Length: 111
Image (cartoon, rainbow, N blue to C red; front, side, top):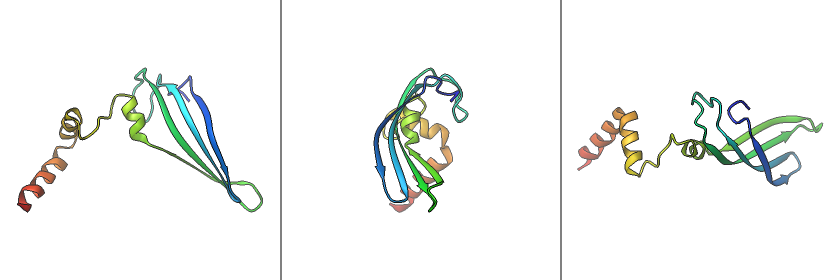
């Protein structure tokens, strides 16, 4: 909650089954606090999210699973770039030089 103090949650759809409820929501807010080690960027995010809530036979909550695309969040915060873009390739090379070197070596050795 500190990361997005102006958090808004818009319910888009609700799906009910015999033992679960699935909620599709849109999360919106401005990152004004630390999130997963990333300092505040001041950028707005808009992220689709799905929550799966399962229930026991006595109708008590058994579990909650939240699914979202973290790359979407990171892209909106300005810290993730498409690996096929020039900037994305440069960032990948800078942050993962050993992995890139191994991939290039495998490519050259296959020829």
